[in-house]
Length: 155
Image (cartoon, rainbow, N blue to C red; front, side, top):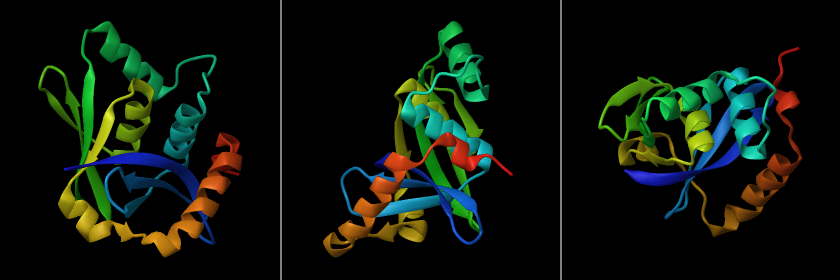
């Protein structure tokens, strides 16, 4: 397992599909995962520190975990089958819960939990970004700085 950071979410054109982009903490691979618009908004809200007037689903789950004395230790992105990614929420009690990566990432950002990705997933679906591609990554980061959660609302 390799630790990954969440670079952010964006809309891929021309399909208008949201993706979340993860990056190896110690490495040069990136992992794009196509996600739903609701999850993209939840991830963007968490990254931007937006606090909704009422708890959204991921905020509610965080509150439930805290209220019951369970902590989210980590999120593991465990496999990819036919382009579909799978994840596990690992609680401090040792309980593991199957979950979608998008929901797992949104929850991890809210709880400050680390996100791990299986080496096999990075080998199969990860993209190498050598130093010469860092300019493109920098342009993506600039995009992320300008995007807002409203950009992911369905029209």
